[in-house]
Image (cartoon, rainbow, N blue to C red; front, side, top):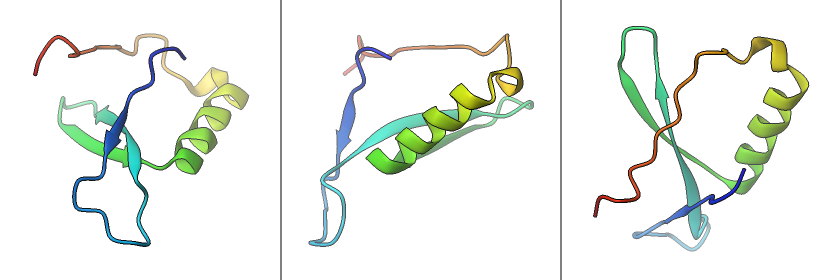
Length: 69
């Protein structure tokens, strides 16, 4: 996956991560749930999807709003 962009943790406490990966989950009814994943969580989810490709929906949508401020 190219162009992974991390979100900076703006009110970080000393024990919290400096940054996160932003992911949005859209359920079957169209409800969007924003998620923030650590490096470890992102790597784990990516590995799980790679190992279980038959469970990854063929009709998923990828969108990018990089053009918005």
